[in-house]
Length: 232
Image (cartoon, rainbow, N blue to C red; front, side):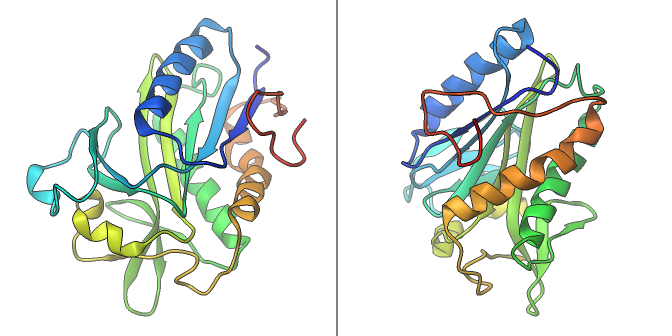
């Protein structure tokens, strides 16, 4: 596969979490073998909690509320559910500088740029993972990041809260941080569709990740799933 070629996938119906993990496991191996392109997969999950490698049992406040999935990504507990756009990003860092910190920084830049298109000032916070906004009531988290890297291929990725039920976050201590809240585009007064968010993520991707690879050119590759508007 040519360096910088990206397959964009999007599902319009919730995807089972274990099915998504199975796909990522397979695709990571294919990317490493050079038989499949780098991939960005945009989707939603049914309501569930995931526990990263640093999750502590006491951070699961309501164990019976939703299914809990242990996962190999970094981080602590996160919530996924309808109204939240999950972006699973499978990139070959062998081609992109073998710099995990630079990759996480690019993820953050991507989320910040996408939020900026909706008039939201997303920011990094020293010592905290994810993207935050100053809501006037203090810092609130609007996007989460949790990554895994295998043989220099990334998977898992990030999520942005478009219009999820924020009460669902009460069943966990999100990312191990109890002193700050969680918000969404909807809670901030932004009325946008999931398609609009997807289009914005696609439009801001290259500026965030192209610096990791010189001379790259991203291009959509046809897939059996729904093709994103504007992507061949």
